[in-house]
Length: 155
Image 1 (cartoon, rainbow, N blue to C red):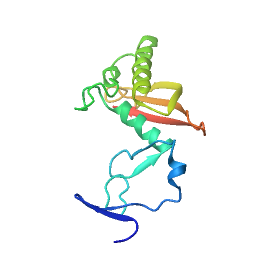
Image 2 (cartoon, one colour):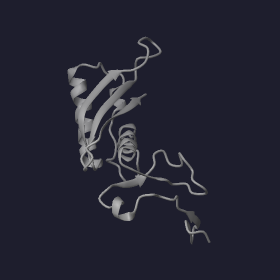
Image 3 (cartoon, rainbow, N blue to C red):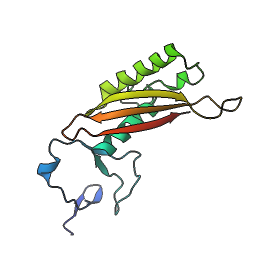
């Protein structure tokens, strides 16, 4: 058996070689890539992420999920599809902002929202205009304080 694999009741699990030690990983957040199975590594189905990519994937998953869609976490997500056919005025924007910030504070760990923008997306007319482009400027709250943006289109 190779040094980077182990056998358990589910079969052989391969571990990707890493140049970071366990001491360096302590204090940082690790998670599963989103979407699942995006990058398969030698027989495994799940890959781990940390840092900006972990937060970016978690935010996209949160914004694209409707509340009640996940069985074991019925309050996970944002109800953003209900705003697709609403006029994008100040009241609608404030409602969208409350939805996003409430869910973000409840489910995203290790980051905070610095800026939020919502714009209509697509061609305006009978066949289009009923989708929203949401852009969040997110700041990590750990030691590196990285700032990055996350864009999601709700159709």
